[in-house]
Length: 143
Image 1 (tube, helix red, strand yellow):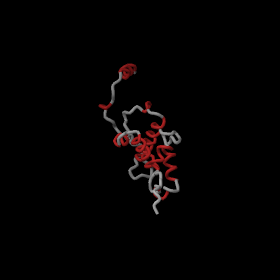
Image 2: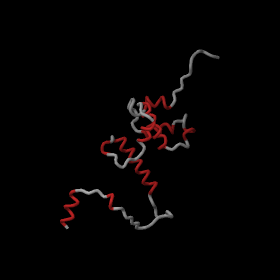
Image 3: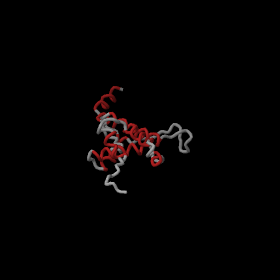
Image 4: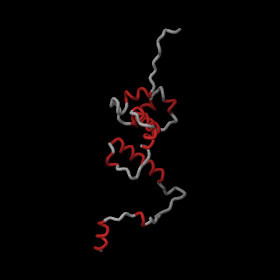
């Protein structure tokens, strides 16, 4: 029986512009927004296998898309750049970068129980990558 009316069912992406970072300012934390989405009874079954960090990244990509940024721009923000000045980032972006560094550290961390663990590992670094500074020359003469 058609009444001529359409049912309106908002998607989580449509609700994003209303309730998350940068638009209405209600939720400014991506992890909180991802947690709410994952714990929502309507979406819980579908998002059960999706990790919290994947949902956070999805929120950031969605925010960037709604602000007119390209996918490449969004994906580049997830890469760690060793030359990037972290002092110039806002608190939220800095926390996200620190989280990425923590994840990378834990991934590369060696524990005593690991098969390739070596106690007191010494690594030689090449001298060519060292930068010269004027104060280095002065301190060599003092000793």
